[in-house]
Image (cartoon, rainbow, N blue to C red):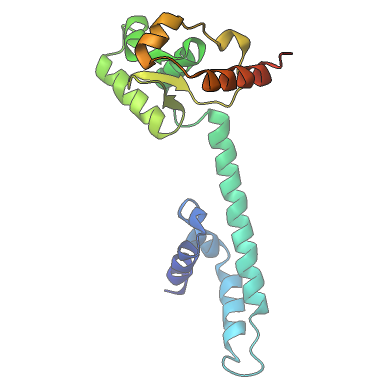
Length: 189
């Protein structure tokens, strides 16, 4: 019962990692030592002689060991590249080398995979924050990675289409956009 309460207290105090590694299992491995320090700490309970230092040390060492186990699990997870199966890894690589893409791009380039499977994989990868939706169209996706804007990513926009779509841009805003582009591209005036 005390170990169950310990787990509950850890969870309530935002030690959420406890749900991924077993505190119970660790204590079971150190059962003899655990009960010795527990009994030692309780023998003078409610008196001035009460000492819980040995139990506290064991508890903190156990937490440290659990954190170490969790870090080892995370390293294995990270080395595997997450929980992506081979098909999802293939989709991710396609998106990465052709981004941004639409669902139709995937369908056309991966005819061996059904559209429903592609949709489910994309949804999973969005939930796992591996890809993100971009643009107005819901079906446009790209691999989520931090990167600098490259010059070749800037696209020339047909001014007539832009004016038709959103109307004329006031000169003040236009100048601000130009100034920001100069800063981003590190251009002299």
